[in-house]
Length: 112
Image (cartoon, rainbow, N blue to C red; front, side, top):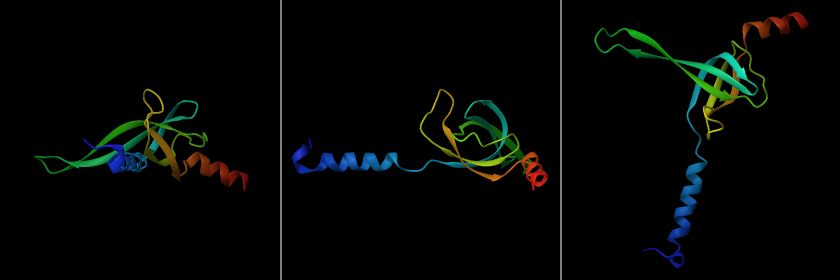
């Protein structure tokens, strides 16, 4: 049994602290809905190869993400990152907007 005097306990707590700070997975997807304030629904698509026919099939999954600045609109292509649980369903946070939606681009052209 390791005691606090030999310093092993400190190493364990230090490694545990460094584990918490590791970044989570990142995914890129399209905003498909805004179910509430500071919340966006993101569809992430991936391609898999059919095991028999060897054709590529598109699969998608929806994630609920936290948008602190409320800057996302439907149609934006965004990057999300995994984070601690923020609510019953939110485990992701918006990292950045990669490509703004077509409507937002049209608004910028109309103003300028």
